[in-house]
Length: 203
Image (cartoon, rainbow, N blue to C red; front, side, top):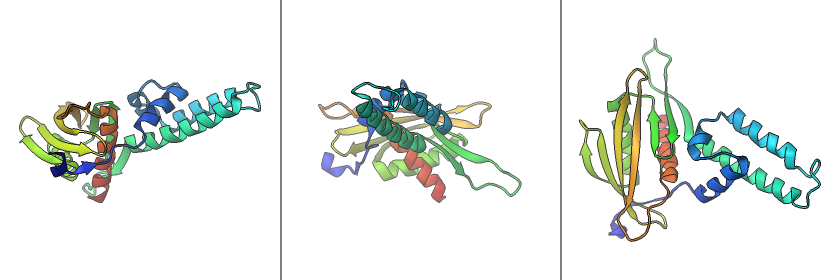
């Protein structure tokens, strides 16, 4: 069955990301997504000032500094792909923009109504796998997808509008269809956020 399913590459640095966040003292990818780029850099610089060989006589100072530099590079790359502001086609008298962002390991928030979000999600789903179930009125989409070096999985998306905010949240459930475990849902969420952002930028 796996050969019949398009294979999709996950966010390549998920394992490294968890290590990077631990190095920077950030609990989860969702916590990282809540930081601004400036906050993230400040956290990195504060730690750098503490462990750099110029101020730290420890034998491991050089190694720790190199690890911190790599951690910041990985975290900053993830951060850039996880929180996006995209110009959206709008009437001449409007100056709104669409926001696509990771709000949790398994949740994406899109600054668009339910119907627009569903259309954007469906196009991304067709790019990464095979849509096996769709119920627009219930806001449910199921996709069969196989990630590179991972088992064939089902991705179930549930859309829920947020009253008063203009946002629609997409909740992800990831289940393996094989004896192997499914990949980390946070990596899938990050990958899909990037895919939705790239698609929205082309529209």
